[in-house]
Length: 288
Ligand code: NAP
Image (cartoon, rainbow, N blue to C red; front, top):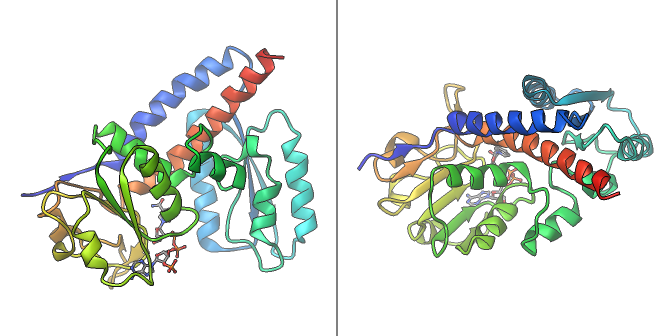
């Protein structure tokens, strides 16, 4: 068997086209979705991510504003800026690019963002709603995985989903979204013993660890669906995931590549959440 490749770029474009229609509908009510992006310090990767996010906004007609600070910014200054943005009607989403300099506590920062503008889905209110299966902003990478599977018509109910990684932004929320869709979920992490024992049982395997070649063909079940979230560099410096793609592809039924798999979906879901927030703001305005 040779697995079918799940084309994240194509799927991301499909959802971005849908968003264009929603943005056009919003414009008839005089609303342009607005995203405020806060960038602190000179982390090279953060600058690249912010550039990509703002470019994606601009392509779709989402207004974005960048607030850029050097790494001497105090926590109070950052919190004041967030509170100001919380009160601005033309801003529907607030994104603080992580990591932050060490004098700033990211938990305090996330908790200061209004849950109604938490388009990254990191606020405890968003997480609580997700865990209790309510509509909310879901964090972008896990949500992107779900939308990808939805596009591919892959059924989730009753499936055994094994998640490698338990971070607050990828592993844990991914598991909860699968659980909400009636999957049976197993989490593995750095302290799990005999990880292949679990991965070989997976109907759907999600790897969100950050280690190249962690998963080989012997670690999966014949016909499994493999979602590779990892973003690593191989020995030649090329971008790669956690999965030995060429080997695992021969045994999986479907597989996401890196690059071109989960990555493009993550930014798309940030756009999705920003548009959703603008739609909620309009609905609230109409309801007085
Ligand atoms: P993270 O916070 O470093 O978490 C990594 C997780 O992997 C931890 O839960 C850790 O366990 C677990 N782990 C470490 N070694 C393991 C092993 N040998 N077997 C099983 N689990 C192991 O990373 P993250 O932020 O979740 O990101 C994970 C990867 O996804 C990274 O490569 C990142 O670059 C990538 N990523 C991609 C996107 C995208 O859009 N494509 C978005 C976000 C992240 P402990 O909890 O026990 O330490």
